[in-house]
Amino acid sequence: MEFRQMRCFATLAEELHFGRAAATLSMAQPALSVQIQTLERELGVQLLIRSTRRVQLTKAGEVFYERCINVLREIENSSAVVRAVAGKNVDRITIGTIYPATFGVLPLFLNKLGKRFPDIQIHVSSGSTDAIIRDLEKGRINLGFIRPVENIGSLRWQSIANERYLLAVPLGSRLETAETVTMSDLKQERIISFSRSNLSYTEKYFFEQFRKFGLLDQVACSCDDTLSLVSLVAAGMGVGFVPEWTRDLPHQSFRLREVEGVDFTIGMGLAWNKEDPTANREEIVEIARTLAASRSLKAVGDHSGRNNTKRPLPAHGE
Image (cartoon, rainbow, N blue to C red; front, side):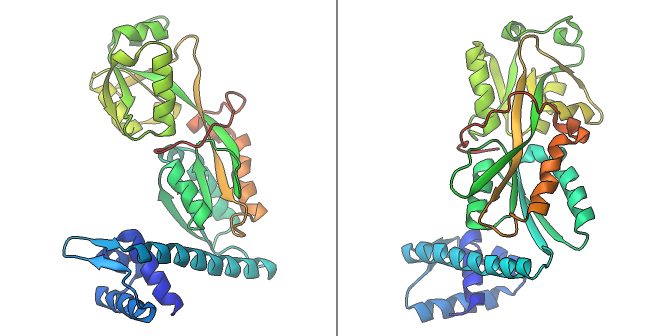
């Protein structure tokens, strides 16, 4: 059994599509098929169920995939350890990020990282908080910008910022010109909310807030992301809570209002696996830590002194 065969199988197990897996591996699809067939012959078991429509893992394939991931991760970690001992700089880093971080924290981090390590190869992948945590635990990524979680096992999380949410209202609406806005005022409005089907941290947070203030019956529309929400507000479909960074969006047809008596902030921070020698290089982690003190974090709401309590791991979404 060869390292290349294991890597080919692991990639195919993740993609469950020969064409996509071959593209990821930068190899021809027939060559990938040969590698998998050779691996199955050597093991004496069927790892995949192939059909014209789909590729599925057998029970043996599922077990072998987990073994492959562990072996591949250990090989990569061993390489990183050897390079670290030899005083070599990190040459590649993979970063997982939730959608909101891409507008504030991530660009600042990449700028600082690029200046400190100009030759480093960087790969950024977007995902939900729970997906990023799984990838950290499996060694697929080195750092993650995610919502608050507890430090459990090898997982480590550090607060970087709190993202403030304000009420987006359509231009020309009564709430745009109102002297003050309260949560009670929303009982006369159609509320646009993030979809509950995704069960993200943000979605769960605002579902709880709407329930607390008796506003669940006012939720008339839902969507999956911030830009869709502000588009619905701009179209006059209703009002909704959005991150403060939306104030900098071009061609706005909505206005952000503070709601009297409430301060909706949601934490964001850096996560890493302390057993990953690449991510645990203090110099890289420290670059992200310095963002907490950066005034530039106003792009995501610089309210680091408020509502900084760690929360349980979200089930899905951001």
